[in-house]
Image 1 (cartoon, rainbow, N blue to C red):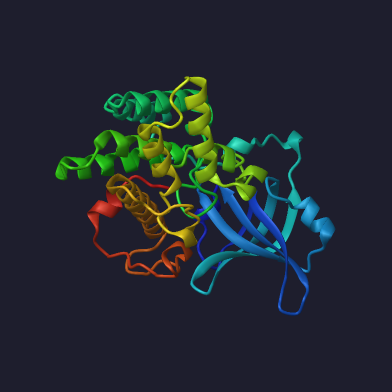
Image 2 (image 1 turned 135 degrees about the vertical axis):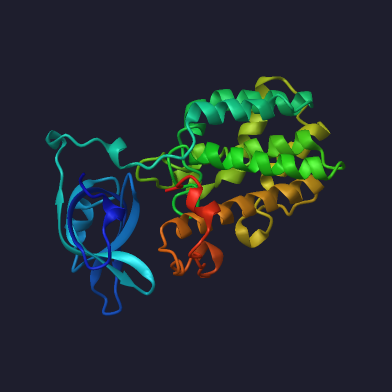
Length: 325
């Protein structure tokens, strides 16, 4: 069986066809140009730097290009990387398809959709259930195909739906434990909170931020979608139910410095923010641990303030968990 990107160990040389998931032309400390690159295939991702680059190299080896990568895996500052020897663009006549290099969520789409629909049926407020159903139908294909982020967490095909379903399961546990929680509002918030990413992101292949994503952002984009849905269904645009739902999505980042235009001012909004943060953290740490040898620490995780996590020699729960990426 041919080796894939993450099958190589430190010190091993490789000649492998991969996707350039991200490529950025940068200056080093001596003001020389290089390409900061992220390579991926169905097994995962590894970064690498293409030194002494120029503008033509940046155009040739751009994000979304399939290339033949010749290099060696090594470690730098606690993180795996590829020392690049050479790159060659792979032509369409060579038989490679973009889908071959895209990692998918560990749950089948049809199963995730069936589970999410069960939660939708438990939303008993007519305003919220109508808007949730309307937007799930409107953005159905993208919602079940797109990642939930570019790199930090759930950055896989179907990651948005996987993240949403995981949050709904957490929400159910909290609502079961705390009777004062408005289950319907919390479920609706979980389903809609990141749906704006179907407009913020370009899709599952070589994911980039769209112009809308860079200029507006997914919190405001989904608020706009909620209002457009309400208009289409001729709802009262000043009703409290609609205001509560809008507040859920607009405050779910929890802090102004995290891009939240409003701070949570509802119990359910506070829970939504914490569930979102929790699920993202669990995913990021688990994914890193699954790529870390037993008895060693993960690489520093930027999403977790640079912290490193230890993988125990014996951890059956982690060993038996579905592989994320």
